Structures are given as structure tokens and as C-alpha cells.
Length: 242
Image (cartoon, rainbow, N blue to C red; front, side):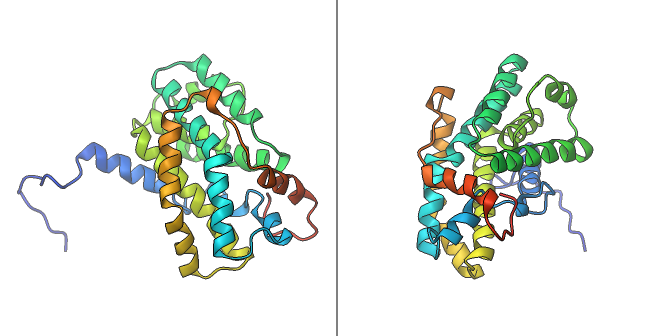
């Protein structure tokens, strides 16, 4: 039975806008949101076959590097700048960010991964969570919107605050990596959660860095992970598309 009350909202309860923002973030960045994230491993499949990732310790180390020194930090920075450009209506700047983000991807399969997810995120958001001006903003970008840019644009159009958007995005990114690894190593559900716990501080640190980063701060030092995404293309048997 639905319980109602005329009592005032308590100080610990979410305001209407905060509740709406949380609801949308939980929906957009849930594994159930159909952007096809389960199809991609970001090169982890090759890392498992090569013996670089074999258990929870090596997986946590690999993902920590990807997060702080590789694609995790770069994607987070692109999300931040796409959000701010969208929020301020700077379509020319947004177009430049979209082009740079698309060019920054190190391999063909990673390009497929991020552009496919970005396109799906925009299409589903437009169909189910449309916002005034979204079509015009997307049309103003000549380059395809890769996934982090797409998330930044949609979150800004819905006035969902940047910081929680960024933390939720990185949590979803790490969770998808762990999900892929759990099917490849394989890992049990509890071990997967242990890896997620180990990466909590790294997610927070990466988000804080990205919030204060300029586009000149972009860079990657995860050469082995980049090679993994390149070599995955020629792997004899594959479960994932990247």
C-alpha cells in the first residue's frame, strides 16, 4: 500500500531536482541501458589470453593503470569539457572537443567501441529522455560523438550536475571492465566486487583530476593496454568486439 504524508521533507531527503538527477544517472549509466557495453572489453580479452591478467590482483593493477594513466582519465577529461561547452552553448568548442576525442582513440576496435556506444547513447536519450536543443547540439558537431562526449552533452542538456555525472560514468566504466574480465578469467561475483572496492579511491582520484584538467593535460602512458586493443583484432577466438 502506498503511504503518503503531509509532513515536511526532512533535511536528509533529496530535493526534487537532486532526485531527478540521481534517477537519470542511475538509468543512463546502468548496465541495463542499451548501449551495448557488454560487447566490449577494451582490450582486456587479449590481456587475459596473453597472461597479463590472470586473477584479481593483476586485474586490479591493469584497471588501475587504465583508469589513472590511460583511457579512463582521457575519457573523463573529454566528458568534463564536453559538458562545460554544452552548458555554455559553445558549439564551436564542443565540435573541436568531439573531433579531438574521436582522434584520440588508439585502435580501430576501440574506435568502434566508443563511437557505437556514443551513437546509441544519443539515440536512446533522444527517444526516451529528450531535451530541448539536443538535436541542434548534436547536429552542430561534425565528428561522431564518442561515448564520454555523448554522456557529457546529454547530462548538461538535462542540467544533471557535472561532478556526480563524472563519478557515475567512471564507476560504470570500471564496472563494465570488471564484468568483461569476470567472464574471461573467470572471476566469481564476490571477487569482482573485491576488485571494484580496490578501485574506489582510483575512481575518485581520476574524477578529481579530470575536473581540474585542461585539454593540454590529456595523455596516455598505458602502452601495453593500447597494444592489447590493437592485437585483439587478430585474436583467434574472441568473445568481445574489442
